[in-house]
Image (tube, rainbow, N blue to C red; front, side, top):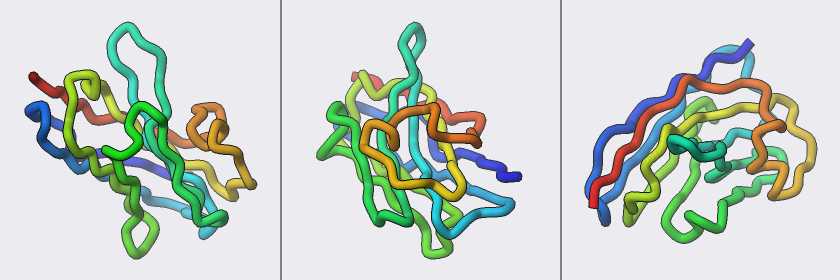
Length: 129
């Protein structure tokens, strides 16, 4: 069993930066996928960024590429999302997700919700213009 707890959300100004954190606890596999997703009111959930420790790859949605960086802490149990140059359209609830023993995946699969077995409760990000 794995538990995920997000933090770091809040309010920000357009052009600013935020760092979201996801603390994972429980039985964390060395080979896993972790990702950040977001959902704005009235919109579908969107994959933002993901990482695959086995393939040593990061994946980014085109909508955030160049503004967002996903990273993991040294113990691989903490996932970060650095968002730079915040835009009002970044306003959403951000969720962390984890998939154990992650097989090789395509970018679409890595940024697709169905891959992931475990989800956090989310943290709200609100960006004002």
